[in-house]
Image 1 (tube, helix red, strand yellow):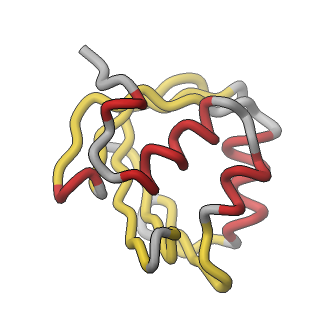
Image 2 (cartoon, one colour):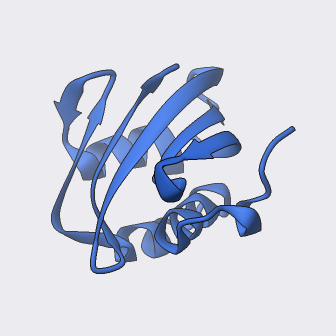
Length: 107
């Protein structure tokens, strides 16, 4: 059974997932540090190009199944209009309440 977004442990991760599910790019980018980075399936990607393509232009949505590491590591069912639905892992590095890096990939 999925974990409700409001029940996610880490407040920054909770706000980021809410921004993804609300298709709110401005809220998402406001939660990133300057110079934030990310990787997908082990390869570093251009963060802003990736979020536009994989989340916002394709209406990405995340249902969190499990969390660990104080809410900074998630297993989630992620779907978008490009790839459909897949089981994914997400790990977040947080600095001063903002995401400095996240890593995602298929679980």
